[in-house]
Image (cartoon, rainbow, N blue to C red; front, side, top):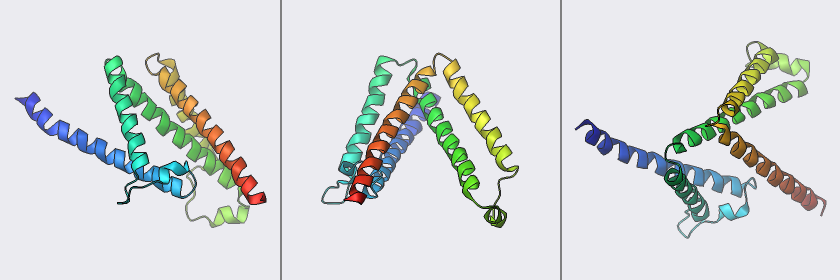
Length: 176
């Protein structure tokens, strides 16, 4: 009885969460494309304003996750969870590095005028970075989660290559 009840509640909740994430990410990619931060193809919409290309891309990504569950059912949750962990930790590393770069560029009088100062200043930020690098090392240490590092770093390299091409194109357009 408990398993049936859990399935009755869990499946619709899971499907609802997947649907909201699919639409949310599709809208995010669409907005980024409109601002020039993602490929222009993601800005395409249907006559009713639905970003159909990004919805299609997200659907393919979800189907790929279903395929992964088929070929490696015992590990797929761990792989996807470790990828999500890697992505989250990487974003926080970038936030902390940005905070350090931002503070270095500010003149001392502007630093004093900040309404919010990080408690402990740069020392706290560096301690946070060390902790996050430790988490990345732990992901790499465990064989079951190591694949997320390979996929995560490959994704970062692809994004960097895309950024380099976009930056080069923007410079060429600015000079023309």
